[in-house]
Amino acid sequence: MPYEWIHPEASGENPAELHLWPYRSLGPRGFAVFIGATVLMLSIPLFSVLGTVILWVLLPFMIAAVAGMWWALGRSWRDARLTEVLTIATDRVAIRRQDPDGRLRDWEANPYWTSVHLQPTGGPVAQYLTLKGGGREVELGAFLTPGERAELAQELRKKLGEFR
Image (cartoon, rainbow, N blue to C red; front, side, top):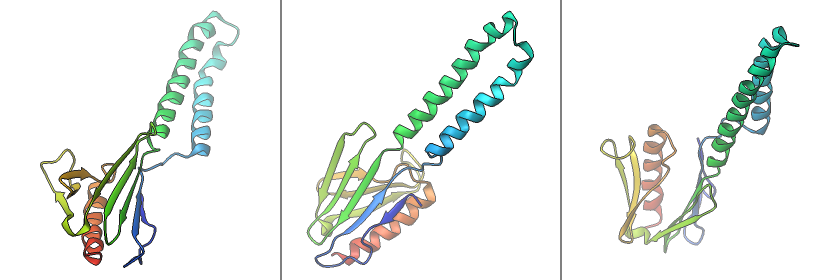
């Protein structure tokens, strides 16, 4: 699961901390292997036209295809730098979200008045998970699968109950 409780046994003075992140199915090594395999597969048809004018006609398109893949995978990797950290303590619940561009967004509320909402339908995504408190409602784990959001909602309700 792309989330982890850092201090699951927290109570009293010690806050519970939940870290969430999007899936990162392709690491740096996989990126290099994929680009290398793409170059290799695209170069096989070029062997039959070596030494001809057709090679120079096809080569820019092959380079553009590899560059496009490189850019798309790099963009996906940069977008996966998103993180959310939820801290639950006796006096406050806080979410700190760091967007891929480095921008930080914070939210705080009193745990006693904080509630977990899971909308099975009608939200932007299935099993839309939000926390409501402090006069605001904030989304949590938009990048999780619907099943993971439902499971996380149960865990959050239990954890919030421990801190009330």
